Length: 489
Image (cartoon, rainbow, N blue to C red):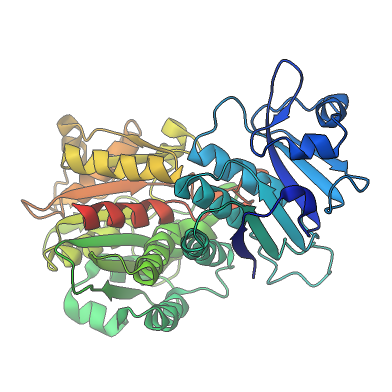
């Protein structure tokens, strides 16, 4: 496990294997953005010229490595560009990219702007997130281990590093779950992990198995999961604080593998569907983080867990299911299954009388078409709630964009035989229509937001900043930030 601490020692004499130094570009070449010039002095005034010689300018995202030849106690200097005026996420991204480039190195110190608690936390958090690896299934020994000891050069209190560690460990938990193959993470196994880790963090945990779900009328969860030999689960996690006056409810889509069911996906769209439980992962990771931080806000999380597979027992297109709310739904497409498990979770969460319900899901391919791989869509039945979610996402550096719920799209969900259908016949606006479907299961007067993060939950491309290839842990920190905001309201 990678650790981080703060230390205000002179970076020139710091005992470490690598110095990560932030640079901005200037008229005389790239210059360190922190310190009193001691680094440049140590290099005989030639640091900028040395970096310019390897075409390093200090632009955001640039990296360059130089041997120090004894100019500093560390044998290696890693220059990372910060651009003109980096914000908190710019610092996180720079720290993460630099630390990720040092895989195989034991220790690193970060000399980036860290003069305030927010800056120091951003650097520490980005570094920890960049140090993440998932090597559980590697046997070849070729994967280099991440940096094990990180030091942020800063005079801020150590509590800043402790908070960053909690956030990073919550995100790492989610990344691990998303990266785990479905052969090792089925609904009951996920529920078992939630019981163990949740109990350790001080959460109250309740698990409903397939019998309890059937007896309780959770038709969406039962319908989606009935085609698999691994039956569905509903996990309720609860955190309470004696000083809390607000209650939040988070509901996460947890399809541990999504084949599309009888409405089978193309094979090219299926190989990364182990990530379809990313919403439940984010809710789980957030509850763990909220509990460990001791935030004064009551928080309840629902993990709606099922495996969507085709078989002789799978639900069929044209089946009608009875949801937990009592409404009936005609299933036109079994690959529109996430909304079916969420509708049960949302209706159940409303019974806890929360101030706000937020559901999180890798819900639609239309989100990726509309907003790309890095930006989640946020919809809500209350403008203030939507803005609060967007503010929390922006502060966390997690891409999110507010989207409408146009009333005219509701007619596309009409069914001739049930209260509504799970899909509109036309493709247009299908991310929004999915949100409109979920809104049907939010009781009158309950404030609610929906986050569709189909793209951001899984990085199919190359790593960047503090984001690895594979599971990203997206929206976990947004949910924690949302809890912090409600704690202060």
